[in-house]
Image (tube, rainbow, N blue to C red; front, side, top):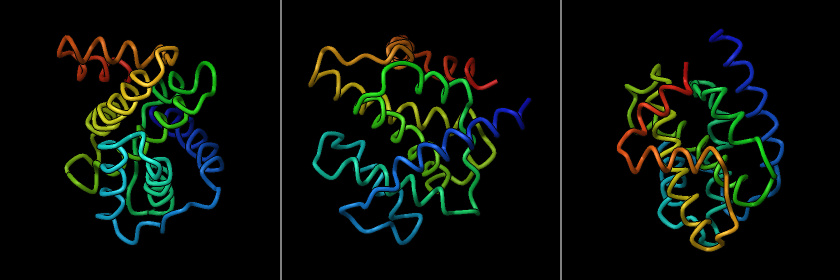
Length: 165
């Protein structure tokens, strides 16, 4: 089951990586620390003109780093890719994947902790999602609405654990 989940996540990451293959307006990160910086910067100011490029650059760095294994939950990947494909949904997915992966660089103890990686990714993605919603009240991603409700009840770790079996 775990291998099937990893395979499904690899397929989704591969497909999303193809979407991220456009030329970026910023240089690729040269180190894990710079990838973390890019991902965090995109969370700090999610609507900044360079936020999309920073998310995608951090994601691409992870895609090319064969020394780190990002353990995205297949249920979460599916939920985030279910529904209309919009700029907000694409940005939220990239932030989730980039932040889940760069969390390993910032905290190596997360290397084998699927729930911890996904908690980091969803926490960052929630901030990005909330900024898109505050800009446009018509933006909604069902899974992120549920994650936000869980966060407001201080139950986000349990919510993530439920989706990362």
